[in-house]
Image (cartoon, rainbow, N blue to C red; front, side, top):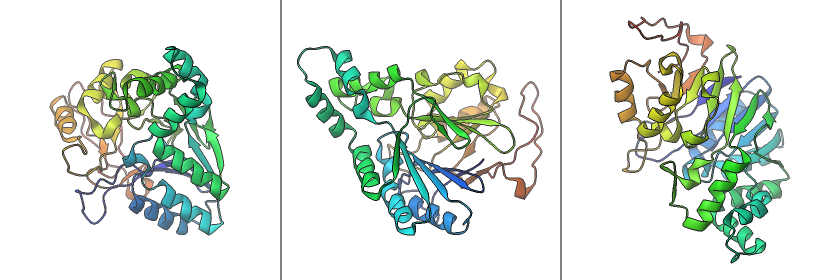
Length: 312
């Protein structure tokens, strides 16, 4: 599969477009998040020019609006076309309601009340699932071990997922796990094998505490749009962080709470890391066999990899 990570439109870096990452081969498209209706329109245009694709899979990493705001628009396009087999992958929170209730263990809540709290907290996903049901799309629980074309869901674990839901109910959606907003912490993570045989981890806004086996990946998505503290935690977990390739999805606008990769970019330059692929500059395509290979001069003591194929 190949990766195409969408970016800003017409140079607009004020709008919070959020994430939309496409993984594709000749017959299959995996859409990992769709944070804006402009992304949905771009996916529609992509499909119109790649008519051999008949299998579309939409993965929702977590409930935040900058990962979900374009999902219903995209599903509307897919439903109207009648050309695609569509499957939605999401955390089906109600399936874990009993375990969440057991973890809360306060003897004050009932199972129906717990389910109601879950539906209120994860409102965006609830709306998307209901629309998928209306359209007759297949809906699958995005749990660890589920395969999606050449991708596989690798996290979070069930215990991590239940912990997040319980804490969100108990302390509110603004509470933190490992310094990350609880609503982000258990984002669905997927592993993808790319056409050049490299493996890549996509992790939404997941907390690094919930990212496992990081040394096994060639390319690591740095979570939460390139948040510096999260990236540093990932670097510390790796045997040699300089040997990895990194990807940042930062097209979340210029507002005070948007984006956030500038500090990380400066840090990586100071510490002599190979620059990350970053949607803040423009759309990222990887591997990009069509534009030729770009050789990079190796810095002393730092392994940068033999070739780069991406558009910076």
